[in-house]
Amino acid sequence: MEVLLITVFVIGYLAITLEHQLKVDKLIPAIVMLGLSWGFIALFLDSFTNWFDPVRHALLNNFDRLDHESREVLLEKTLLRHLGKTAEILFFLLGAMTIVEIIDYFDGFSTMKTFIKAKSKVRVLWIMSILAFMLSAIIDNLTATIVLLSILQKIVRDDKLRMWYAGLVVIAANAGGAWSPVGDLTTTMLWIADKVTTTYLFVYLFLPSLICMVLPTFIASKLPAFKGEIEMEHEKNEPVNNFRKTMLFSGLGAIVFVPIFKMITGLPPYVGMMLSLGVVAVLAELLTNYSFKMAQVKEGKSYKDKPENPVHRSLSKVEMPSVLFFFGILMAVAALESVGILYSFANSLELFLPMMGTELHGEGVSDLVVLFLGVGSAVIDNVPLVAASLGMFAQPIDNELWHFIAYAAGTGGSMLIIGSAAGVVAMGMEKIDFFWYFKNISWLALIGFLAGAGVFMLTRTLI
Image 1 (cartoon, helix red, strand yellow):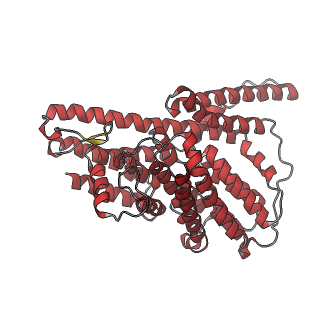
Image 2 (image 1 turned 135 degrees about the vertical axis):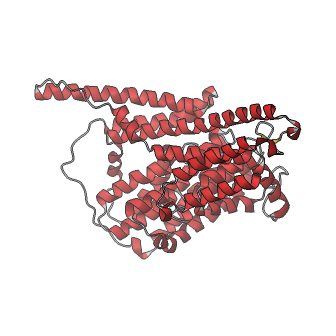
Image 3 (image 1 turned 30 degrees about the vertical axis):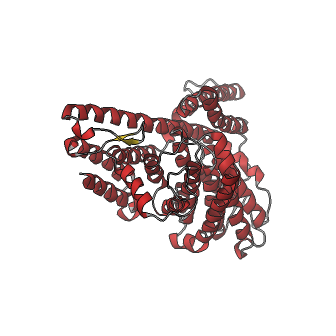
């Protein structure tokens, strides 16, 4: 029956990878995988010989001797555990996405255009890369890419030049997301699973991630595409919104507060994110009501209709298909973990893959395996790869293996335009061709990825 589960997962994964060719949204195969995987486990429960214990990170003793009723109880407990762990990630994401939408409701991100006043193509490149690197660490790499490309579309006329900027923004955003617990979904998954902490993420990954951004940007600045100056298209007569900066800094500060809340209380990150969302929502409501009353006073009129609720509006704009996709893929991977498939695969890696690189605490996990994971994240989605690694490896919290996985999965996706959420959204917003990106940007991303990995290997020897 293990073969049947693997077949379901492989077919579903191919459907996710080929979503553009099949013209089927990736959330559909993801949730079908979820239903079929757990359905087959329930139907053929007595035929499985292994069951994985996530607490001990080992196969359950004497599972083959349990009767059917005992196995059903174990299945229910396991399913509820995975549902709870997945819900932690999803509610965390919902909170963060809603805060970002509230900032956007007040047009807060438009204030960032004031940082881009240079006309030199190289200076604009560095400004955009640094903004992408820092902003993605706070609001995640996907949102940072959307924000910065939206700004570029307003100030840069040349479509081909914007494609070059977009490619470097993708590299910088993915690099910036790797060293922050809220910067990339895969890093967030490791953080919520108590595999990494905020302090050691910064210590281990800030410098490698910085090199991963700086080196490609430096090389690109020497290319002909970034020679000379650009004609910027600045907006004129833009309506003034007095609350832009207030909501921008309040929202970003609220998200930054979440890791601090976790360190102080020890509670799961989604609790802190809900608190942050509540504070930002209250502020948004107060500012909206204040603006509405000021408009009444200024115009000398009394309106019967209430002002639009900014929180409800922001919630309606949250991408639920993405949330459902993550739910489906994480629970499908959990099914493979529960019947011991991922654990067995991890043991196979130790037996058949060459032991290259530094072994970590005698576990036999080589640097080559993690680098393969990074390259693999450029071809297929990094979320299931990291989800699978959580079930495969048993290293303790803040072991360098987890930080290397966070770096590789977070930055490796930059090597192909379809390898990361940031790349996919850039592909759509700027109509970037797959082969154009492969020819012009992929080699820069590869250099940055390998250079950052080398810096990480050096850094861990000093810690």
